[in-house]
Structures are given as structure tokens and as C-alpha cells.
Image (cartoon, rainbow, N blue to C red; front, side):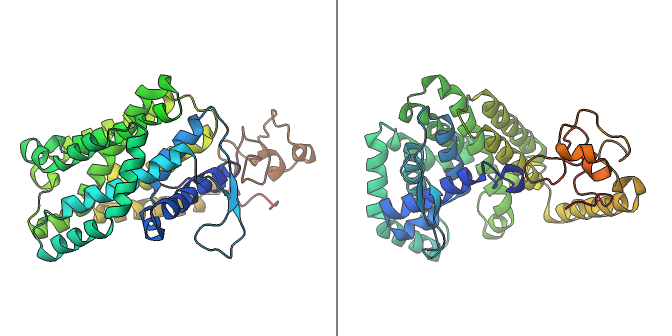
Length: 350
């Protein structure tokens, strides 16, 4: 997952920061300060989804996060969804260390075994926390340990263990928050997210895996077939979000979906680093060409003179390009959403 656009979620962005930093604080409090390094956007997103669906209003505390000298801000470090996400993150570390302990490299195997020894107490506490909420911890960890078997038998469906684990993780929020009607869509959301997590890791590691002689599905399977599975997962992810009945922060969740799609576009299209650079260069040249065009310095959907009659912003009464054309939504400085002119050069207001 990617962070939401701050400018586009000015009113609700503090909820994302409160969930992300709340997860870090929860990890440190429950599993030791070193566990704060496990904070990640995927787990924070799961926590935020739970807070967004919870019929009860989340309780916020004014705290600091990484910098104790900073000004306190609202965080949620003890919400059931955040506690669940923290415990899952620690157990995920265990699964990762188990996988690394089977690595071909002697050094990596040794470090993984040492890591399992050092993190044992935190993992035991996380497992106990999950078990206390009737989460099927043992079966999920066992499924992840069967990853190599699935990769060997059906590489095109190598994402299934991770997808199934994420589906169980997110659907368990229905138990924690007593919202059984949301279970199916939560499971679909997690399954899609887990699938994309697996494929993205495999895509990023393909060169290293090839150099070290390790399995990677992109080395044996048709990339187009994998891209179809990724596209299907992304569509399921969006459909699941659309099917959930959010009590709050629905705009924030939608913005996270949007920014994730934009920032992960290269992965969703399975572009190589060279292809991604070429695409970025094409976009840059296109933007420069648009700026050179006189029409670029006008409103997005009309010339500045074509004033939108539906504008009710007080500035519109003053007349002029900027007053009648610019957005007045969060983060914008003009007024009329139906005829947007986001900071174009013909506007004089700031």
C-alpha cells in the first residue's frame, strides 16, 4: 500500500497518521522498542480499515511517535484492529525468518536462526494475543510454511498461501468488531492484498533470485499470465473496498486506493526499471508540451472566460478567471469545482 495524498485528504489525513504511528507505538509497547521497526503501510491499512468499520467511535490520544520532542498529535495505539495488526506483523516476522532459515546461503540461514532465537519472546506474546481472540494462528503459519511446496507444484498460483493468510487476517476483523455482515468483503480485500504483496515481492526480487539460483515465478512463468492474476487481484481489491460499509474515513480509504494505483503503476503493468524510466520521460515531455500550449494556461475543462454558472463560492461574485474557475475543495485556493483550474498561470490569486 501507499500513503494517501496529504493535499487531497487534508481533513482525514490525521487518521492515517494516527493509525500508522499508533501501530508503531503499539508494537513498541507490546513487543519491545525494536519491534517498532516492523511498522508498515500494509498493516497500518488493515488497522485503518478496522477503525473505519468499527461501529464504536475510535478513541484518540495525543501522543508523539518517533520524536519525543515533537508536538503531540492524535494516535490510536490500543484499538482492537491496531492490536491485531501489530500481533500479525510480529508473527509475519516469524514466518519470514522460518523461510530465510531454509535459504541456500549459510550466512542468511545463520542470521535467520539467530533472529528466531532473539524474537522468540515477542513472537510468543503475539501468538498468545492472536489465540486469545480465536484467530487460527497455527493454521495460518502452517499454510505459509507450505509456500515452497506450492511454488514447486503450481508456480502460477504461488501467491495462494500469502493471499489465504491475508484473507484470514482481514476477515478476522469481523470477529473483533462484531460486524459479521462485513466478513465476506473483508476476506476478499485481504486475499487480493496478499496476492499483490506476493507478486510485488517476487517482481522486485527476480534479479537477486536469479543470481542466487533461487525460485522466482517470473523466471518460469509467462509474465502476461502473471500480470492477468495481478490485474484480477487489483480489481478484486477495488470491488471489496466498494462493498464495505464504512462508518468513517471512506474518503481516506478511497484516496489510499487511488495513490496506491498511481505509485504502483509500474508493478501493476510489470514494467522493468528501464520501461518505467521511459514512461516517466514520456509523461515529462507530454507535460512540458502541454505547458507550452496556450490552452494549458486555461481552465481544465473550459476557457477561463467560460464561467461556471453553478459556482456558489463568494469569490465568484468578484469576477475574473481565478475567481470563477478554481477549485474550492481541500487544498485548493480558488472556488468552483465544476470548472476546475488548479493553479493555472492565468490565475492571480494564491
